[in-house]
Length: 329
Image: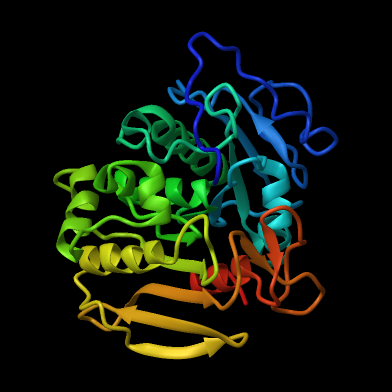
């Protein structure tokens, strides 16, 4: 997430994502439904106040009504490569769901980071959050999906909590990989303080930031899965602890893990609400730096491919997050 600076350039024309999608994203821009089995751009999905780009992947022959996963890339990455490298497209074929891949542009942020720290991009009905919500509604309409999930890495993880807070009715669950609590930049006074130090907030204060994002909404709230490298120096692990405090408080859970075990050799915890339902889940990837955990291979629990900020640690975060959501596994 380093190099998040470089906000909107007034009057700038949106650019294709550095040509990195060439050969992966279908050309054109008709706004028609994406061809199944191809990562393709969708235009005309709404007023798009955040000036983002929408891509999606629909497996061949996917029936109507199957779930949707919204997967958001980190800084310096692009939509299609993140969808493939993280394993989400692979799992879409395996388990049967569609993937919406929001794309940031250099016109919005010089390093293609989602602007999780900008007040105008994190409010309901405003900026990038509103653009992503419009993508969700477009895909929900086209696919007949009743359940939508949202996930992302780093800045995409920060935008994941934005969507969970600003549009809680739209998502059944969220998966944050090396990301930040909602309102962290505002609580800490700057994005960098949030990333490197964290913000001094009580669980109630963290929860209030979420509740204030959509006043009057009383639930149900999306569940949360947090995946964090313990050696991450870009988004410090304190942010994972703050995410747990924020979302256990939102769910009315007591903040004490009800399950402590290991998955793939890594510490794993589950927090349950008063009714016994799991509402927050965490994976601490021991010794891992900043990136998306993957486990390339053909095994049942394997997925993803290693790359920049996509780290082979013998555990595929997309698989574990998706399994927790009940998508497969």
